[in-house]
Image 1: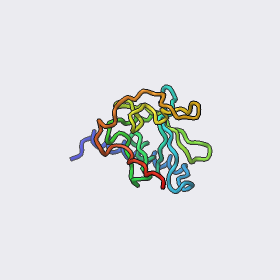
Image 2: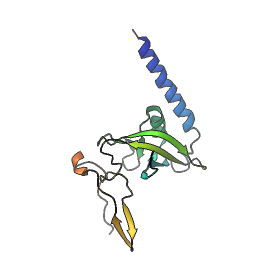
Image 3: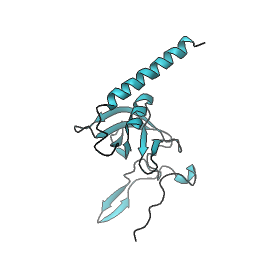
Image 4: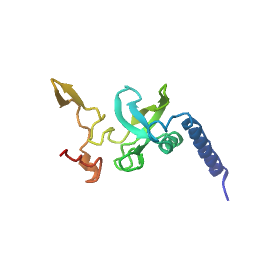
Length: 159
């Protein structure tokens, strides 16, 4: 037997899914092979935290749940921000650019307050100074805390 509260919750989920699908119909996912750039910024300071990608499914899930979900191009699967580390993002606002092929998410970074897999608040923690890249931010957390398989795999060297 379905209780009234359960029925209301199911209806709310259906409404959110429908809204997400309507919103995603406007986005030009086809232009870049099924994904769009998704720039996450802090909802209070507007600091750029990270750049990732979303496919339609990731966008729809983000709208429906209010939590950032991206598409990992290297792993070819949805990447629910914080699923391994607990550093998830609550979405406060979503904006679409004039070409409908890039999204800005205004987010509240939760967990250890590190959007970057290297343990920094922002993935943009290096600044070009005198021709050299210098780390200018404080690391919030040692990413080793999350286990040996956390984050990106090391890049292969050229040659």
